[in-house]
Amino acid sequence: MIHRALLIGFTAFVFALAPRVRAHPAVEEMAAAATNFLAALDPQQLAKAAFDQKSEERFNWHFIPRERKGLPFREMNPAQTRSCPMQCLGAA
Image 1 (cartoon, rainbow, N blue to C red):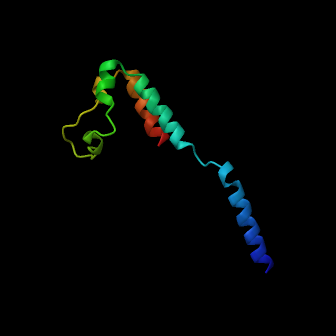
Image 2: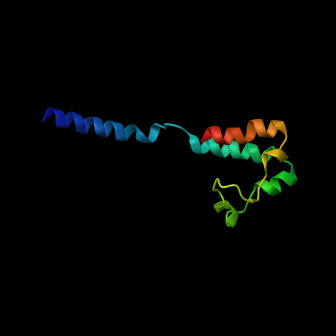
Image 3: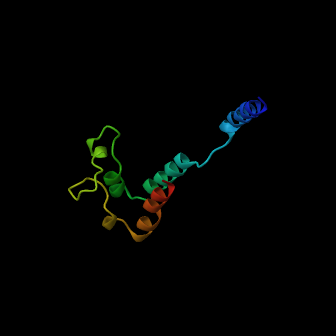
Protein backbone atom coordinates (compact mmCIF):
# COMPACT_ATOMS: atom_id res chain seq x y z
CA MET A 1 0.00 0.00 0.00
CA ILE A 2 2.85 2.39 0.82
CA HIS A 3 4.50 1.61 -2.52
CA ARG A 4 1.31 2.50 -4.34
CA ALA A 5 1.00 5.78 -2.44
CA LEU A 6 4.64 6.61 -3.24
CA LEU A 7 4.11 5.79 -6.90
CA ILE A 8 1.01 7.98 -7.08
CA GLY A 9 2.81 10.80 -5.28
CA PHE A 10 5.84 10.57 -7.56
CA THR A 11 3.63 10.47 -10.66
CA ALA A 12 1.75 13.57 -9.50
CA PHE A 13 5.07 15.33 -8.83
CA VAL A 14 6.37 14.49 -12.31
CA PHE A 15 3.18 15.72 -13.99
CA ALA A 16 3.28 18.91 -11.93
CA LEU A 17 6.82 19.62 -13.19
CA ALA A 18 6.17 18.59 -16.80
CA PRO A 19 5.11 22.01 -18.09
CA ARG A 20 8.29 23.56 -16.65
CA VAL A 21 10.76 20.99 -18.01
CA ARG A 22 11.92 21.20 -21.63
CA ALA A 23 14.21 18.57 -23.05
CA HIS A 24 15.37 20.45 -26.14
CA PRO A 25 14.02 23.61 -27.77
CA ALA A 26 14.41 22.16 -31.27
CA VAL A 27 11.50 24.10 -32.75
CA GLU A 28 12.97 27.44 -31.70
CA GLU A 29 16.46 26.45 -32.88
CA MET A 30 15.20 25.27 -36.27
CA ALA A 31 13.09 28.39 -36.77
CA ALA A 32 16.03 30.64 -35.88
CA ALA A 33 18.38 28.70 -38.18
CA ALA A 34 15.91 28.88 -41.08
CA THR A 35 15.38 32.61 -40.49
CA ASN A 36 19.15 33.17 -40.45
CA PHE A 37 19.52 31.13 -43.64
CA LEU A 38 16.89 33.14 -45.50
CA ALA A 39 18.32 36.43 -44.21
CA ALA A 40 21.78 35.50 -45.56
CA LEU A 41 20.52 35.10 -49.13
CA ASP A 42 20.39 37.77 -51.81
CA PRO A 43 17.03 38.40 -53.53
CA GLN A 44 17.73 36.01 -56.44
CA GLN A 45 18.80 33.22 -54.09
CA LEU A 46 15.80 33.85 -51.85
CA ALA A 47 13.46 33.52 -54.83
CA LYS A 48 14.93 30.06 -55.51
CA ALA A 49 15.12 28.89 -51.88
CA ALA A 50 11.67 29.83 -50.57
CA PHE A 51 8.46 28.10 -51.65
CA ASP A 52 4.84 28.83 -50.90
CA GLN A 53 3.27 26.43 -48.39
CA LYS A 54 0.82 25.30 -51.09
CA SER A 55 3.59 24.53 -53.61
CA GLU A 56 3.83 20.97 -54.86
CA GLU A 57 7.63 21.30 -54.72
CA ARG A 58 7.53 20.80 -50.95
CA PHE A 59 6.67 17.15 -51.60
CA ASN A 60 9.72 16.68 -53.86
CA TRP A 61 12.07 15.63 -51.04
CA HIS A 62 13.19 12.15 -52.11
CA PHE A 63 16.92 11.36 -52.35
CA ILE A 64 16.74 10.05 -55.93
CA PRO A 65 18.75 12.37 -58.20
CA ARG A 66 16.31 14.25 -60.39
CA GLU A 67 15.43 17.77 -61.44
CA ARG A 68 14.31 19.93 -58.55
CA LYS A 69 13.58 23.57 -57.98
CA GLY A 70 15.54 25.29 -55.25
CA LEU A 71 18.89 26.80 -54.44
CA PRO A 72 21.82 24.43 -55.04
CA PHE A 73 24.92 24.63 -52.84
CA ARG A 74 27.04 25.54 -55.85
CA GLU A 75 25.13 28.83 -56.16
CA MET A 76 25.85 29.82 -52.57
CA ASN A 77 28.99 31.57 -51.37
CA PRO A 78 31.33 29.80 -48.91
CA ALA A 79 29.99 31.66 -45.87
CA GLN A 80 26.43 30.65 -46.76
CA THR A 81 27.29 26.99 -47.30
CA ARG A 82 29.31 26.69 -44.09
CA SER A 83 26.97 28.34 -41.66
CA CYS A 84 23.34 28.54 -42.65
CA PRO A 85 22.35 25.09 -43.95
CA MET A 86 24.54 23.42 -41.35
CA GLN A 87 22.75 25.34 -38.58
CA CYS A 88 19.44 24.03 -39.91
CA LEU A 89 20.75 20.45 -39.93
CA GLY A 90 22.38 20.85 -36.52
CA ALA A 91 19.14 22.07 -34.99
CA ALA A 92 17.36 18.93 -36.15
